Structures are given as C-alpha cells and as structure tokens.
Image 1 (cartoon, rainbow, N blue to C red):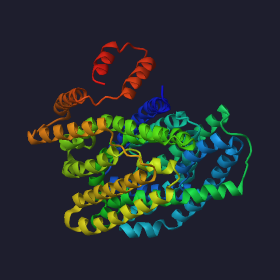
Image 2 (cartoon, helix red, strand yellow):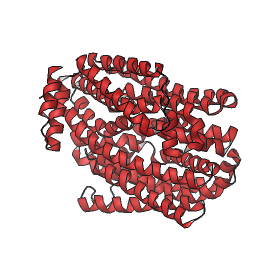
Image 3 (tube, rainbow, N blue to C red):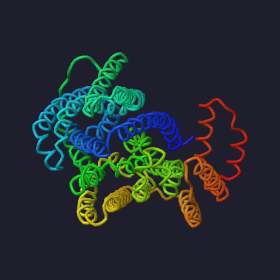
Image 4 (cartoon, one colour):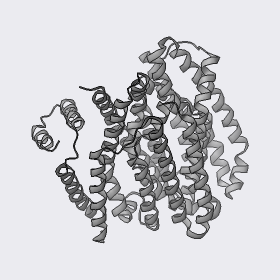
Length: 509
C-alpha cells in the first residue's frame, strides 16, 4: 500500500470521528440558536449574533493565530526535534493566557463605544458579560490545537464538539423554561466555556499529554509568533470576510435584519462540515509527507481527499440550494422565510470554498502563511467594499453576494498559489467527471421548478437525486483504487461484510 493510501486512510478514520463530533456540535448549536431565536425577539437574536461576532474577532487576536499554526509546528518538531516539543507547547500557552486577559480588559473597557457603533445600548451589558469567556475559550482552543499536532482528535471531539455545546444548550433551555431574562444567555455562555476548559485541563493532565511545570523558550516563542502573526491577520481577515455582512447589516439596517440574515447564514455554513473535519486531520499528516519531500504523494492525497469531500457535501448542498424555503422553515420557523434567497446565494459561496479542497491548509503545511494572509486580506477588502455598495440598495441579498464573491476570490488565489509552488491541484480525472455529472444533474432538477411545502416532501426527492447521482458516478468510472481501499477500511472498522458493495464498486474502477 502506498504512503498516499496510508495517509488517506488515517485522514478518513480521523475525519469520521471529527465529523461525528461536528454533527453533534452543530445539532446542539442549532438547537441553542433555535431556542434563542424562537424564545426571544428577532432584534435580541440579532444582538446575540453581533456579540458573538465581536468575541470571535477578539479570539483570533488573543490566540495570535496559534490555533492554525500549532498543529503544523507540533507535528514538525515531533518529526525533527522531539525534545523541544514541550518548550513550544508551554510557551504558546503562557503567551495566549496573558494576551487573552489583556484583550478581555480592552473589550470590557470599550464595550460602550462598540455599542454606539451599532446604535444598540443592549450590546453594552451583553459584551461586559460575555468578554469573560475569552480567556477560557482561547486556552481551550490552544490545548486542542496542540493535541491535533500529536495526531489526536479525541480532545477536539469530546470537549469542543460535545461538552461545550451540550452545556450551553442545556443552560439556554433551562433559562428559557424558567423565563429568565435575555442577559442570562451571555452568562450561560461564559460558564459553559469555563467548565469546558476545566474539564479539558483535568483530562489532558490525567492522560499525561502535558508535562508538569512551565518551560519558557523565548527563541521558540519568537519563531512561533513570527509564523503565526500572518495566520492571525488571516484569521481576522477571515472573520471580516465571514462576519462583515452581519456587522454592516447591523450598522445599516439594525439588529432585526441581522437576526433575519442569521437564519440563513448558519445553515449555509454547514456545507464545509466535511472540509473542516478533514482539515483538522490533514495538516500533521501532510506535514510529515512534505518534510520528507514526498510531494507526489501529497498531491495524490490532496486530489482524492478533495473528491471525497465534494461527494460527501454535494447532497447537503442540493437540499439547501433546491429547497431553501423548507430548509429555513424547518430550522428557524416561518418568520425567517424571506431569507431563502440569501441561503441560496451563500450556499454557492460555501460550496465553491469546498470544491477546491484544502488549499489554505496546504499552504500552511509548506509554510507559506504570508500568502494566505495576503489573499485573505484582498478578499476581505473586496467583501467590505461590496457590502458598502450593495447593502444599502439590496439589503440582505447584497450582503450574501458580497460574502460569496469574497470566498470565490480567496479560494482561487490560494489554489493558484499552491499550484505555482508545488504543482498541486484538485482536478484529477475522476473528480472532474464527478463535478460535471453533479452540476448537470442539479441544473436539470432546477429546470423542473419543483415546489414543496415541507422538508418531509423534499427529503424523498433528494434521495432519488442522490441515488441517480451516485449511479452516474459509478457508470462514468469515477472511482479510484484508493476509494476501494477506503471501503475496505470502513468494512473493517464497522465489522460488517460489504461484499456486494465491493463487487459493484470494483467493477467500475
């Protein structure tokens, strides 16, 4: 078995675990949002989204980009200089702890100015409560990033994907049931983050992942910060790209419109679920291949992985794009139906982000973080300009167009850079055939102008659509040897006999 196949199987096993955790996290996250959206007013739901947007931006600054840098750096040092790994980890934790406390104080002090920017006094109290979650959230993220550098996904799944969203959802439901005021939501957020960090710290200490004591290394700290700062700026620009629509809608049109828009946005952000799950496993394994100069194997991993991600994502995209009204109504209720066009537009942007694969993570693997910063800053700038031009005239649809265009630009730039640097691209022959079949079939179904009134009518149509798509993929011989090897891994993992499926698949390799 080739090294590419071995890497793909490790990624597939890890991605399956992360995906399960992500689904659980999204389920409880959606449930929490749905309770807040239904129990409180549209304007209060808008305030909740604005506050979390500010906190997310602060998180990127507080962590200095370490969450993206550490999986690569820990994996690299484990391969080349194992004795320096704990120095790297300990230094990173101290830097983030100090920086996050500083930014907590800054946000608390300037909460009044931030609220005046959006013209909503309710933001003051909300921000002054929720900022205390920042140090807990930042340290949790760094510890989990370190564990990913060790090739572990357990901490990510258990604590970030299960413990935190479950706690927050439980607190929100209890608060709604008891009729507690809106401010309780933000207090619940802080407590959930604090308890998650406490449980995670106890667990990694018990497992012996971290050593006792603090070991600071200024040289390693400077190297890490130098590598991470472009990733921090990338993260800020990424949040600008993702959340400028929310912030500018709040500035131009008010909290109620923000609440309406954020019925569509979280659903569209479900689309990169498989991409993001694979992205948590990909960097350490890809770093090992790259460190040994095995670029051809890395290219093969990239192409096959991108095809798997697209095939897994396409059914969800089809549901959202073909039936946006019933999708929004199912999750958030009929009062958000006017956001259906927004959902379709955003779905196109996030699907394009998915179909080009892990281009950003691959650039991190080859230590080209500066270019990621430049491409994301360019896209964020385009996003801001388009939002300024489009929101006053087209409202929430204009904001969605701005976000979609920015995702298109950053992914094209990153993919071109990756190809120029190491000649890696996602477009293997089997993948191209899968793309053509998928979008031609989608166009045909759109041409039928189907109208359904409930998600339960949409699902059977989707099942037929996906069945036809998979059949055409098989008939077009868009199956690779690595796909069969993955099927064998799944068979072994599940402990079931997939003899019939294997025979069918092997006939079309």
